[in-house]
Amino acid sequence: MNYLQFDFEIQDNEQQEKLVALLSDQGFEGFEEEPQLLKAFIAEELFKQTEFSQVIDMFENLAYKKYTVENINWNKQWEEGFQPVLVDDFVGIRATFHAPMKEVLHEIIITPKMSFGTGHHATTYLMIQQMKELDFKGKTVLDFGTGTGVLAILASKLGASNVFAIDYDEWSITNTHENIEQNACSNIRVAQLDALPVEEKYDVILANINLNVILSNLKSIVLGSFSGTSVLLSGFLKENETLVKASLAEAGLQYISTLQRGDWILVLAIMP
Image (cartoon, rainbow, N blue to C red; front, side, top):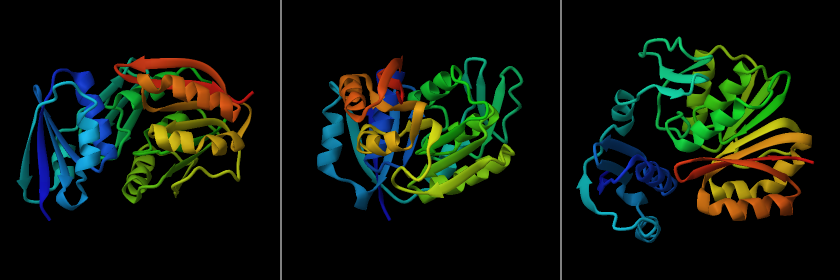
């Protein structure tokens, strides 16, 4: 199977992070970062020109070149380039082949895969920062769109009584199981689901996915909430804040605050 390679001329880190997240939603599955250059890869059969053009139009004067290349093990290349992540002095995320991060309160060890949620992306960083401000001791937690399981693992380390981590992607579920074992977390359940379950209610709901998935699941988030449940939502841009706030109010959730990193934001809400 051939791949398409796109080489983008990058102006800054914020532009790069935004482009990676948007292209990931379009099925791009491999990225290589170099100074002022981002290489992005997608299977030729999955490429859709209309959706790609919509992403490109979001950027001003974004120059790129397109190539056709033979299949390469992109995940292996990504693993080899994985670098530790530091969120203040609160959390450090590293692979098994990195040295221990003794300067942080909580260390999370992962087997790096291309699943969203390693901590490198601005929205995962924001989720971790906001989690620092919440009390997880004895709380039940739902991690909706768990990716690598990093947020579920952190909730467990922060004292949650039990955590339910879900994702639609089989690869993410496999990687989450690996990472839970690496971090010796015995109170995390994992399931492959493409929608938020409503059979249980949770004290904290974490949803770091994308705008459309979050908005389509707000009713389920409400059904899965007690009075006082904290809801952390991220995976969308600052330009979507007004829409998110209006959707929260319509669903019956109370907006509390917004955190921002680059063009990306996190919204904190509670169930009244």
